[in-house]
Image 1 (cartoon, helix red, strand yellow):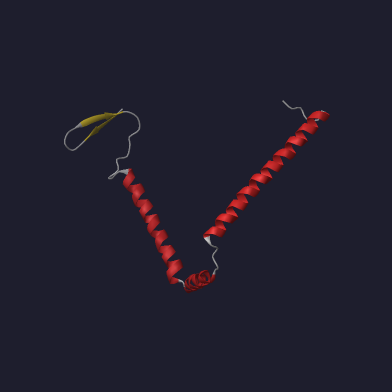
Image 2: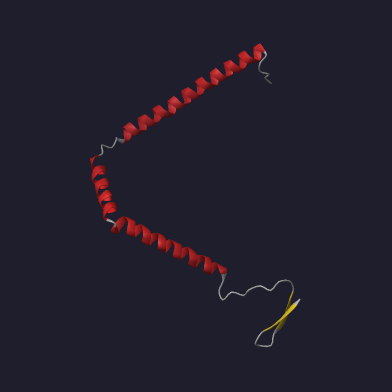
Length: 115
């Protein structure tokens, strides 16, 4: 047991290992560290995107190419989505039937025990 005395004369007994008293809360330290990491990341992204000439040229060329893209109409995208959903269900149903037939066949032959 360790006894601690403050400047005001207050005395306290502490059991176990003494703990370090921080000048500020640990939450502030974690928040400050996160802020520094975010600031460094923002500076690196700014340097990579806005300062470096090859990156700027790439982004300008990408913007020009995106303007040339022939985007599909909403109706066409919805129609294609329904085709994909229907094909997915049809393929899964066909696989279910084939699996059922195989399991029935191998169960009848005695290779596979069902139930």
